[in-house]
Image (cartoon, rainbow, N blue to C red; front, side, top):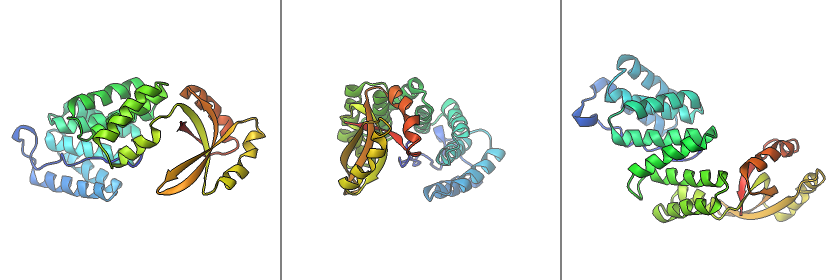
Amino acid sequence: MRYSGRTIWLALLVSAGCAGEQIAPETRRKLDAAQADYGVKKYQDVVRYTNEILRNEPRGEGAMQAQYLRGMALYRLKEFAPSREDLQRVYDRTRNADLRIKATDTLGELAYLRGALEEADRLLTEVLDQTPEGERPGDHARFRRGCIRQRQGKWTEADVEFEKVLYQFPNTPTADKARRRARGRSWTIQVGSYDSKSNANAAAPRYRQAGLRTYIEPVMQDGKLKFLLQVGRWGQYEIAEGNLPAVRRITSDAFLHVAR
């Protein structure tokens, strides 16, 4: 979700459709091929296979599964607008409840990415309402709801979401992301990551000369101690975002980050 690196679960694509609806053998073969290609990140091939399916079979459960796979492949290719169209069609038309939940989850992510926080929150809440506790995609939905709360300046409410991720999905990549964002209380702009504090200190004066206050945050990343050079502390996302252009005039790849 941009959610980069998050796991997409495709186990839903089974040999028969909802309520015993059969999927034609040729359609099943192409669905299996598309799913295999998705697993090895051949997203363009996924789009090719699913395009063929949808040309020949525009309706039915096979079409819904193809539409979902194509939407997810387009999501991975960062073609967000057509991805949203495919997943919205699945959301509106499929009779497969599990497939609909997975489409809903990614639609929530797409809404978050374009800043439609109310829509994202509604969709992700729908995922949680229909997913048993401790089952996926509830991990992503709850994590992203925590991110939304942080964007809204509701830091304590965000911690509740992250703690539930840590409790329900321990030792998972989503839990690792939740742990890094938990107990955040402000927004900062990250401008560099260094192996030593002295290197971070050496890079800081160029920002202070521009009238910007700097911070150095030690963190563990991939089992190694890193020193993050950050600029500013703001309680509201909009204020931090408003300061980003000035910082990017110094470091073009600076980005917003949560700080404790």
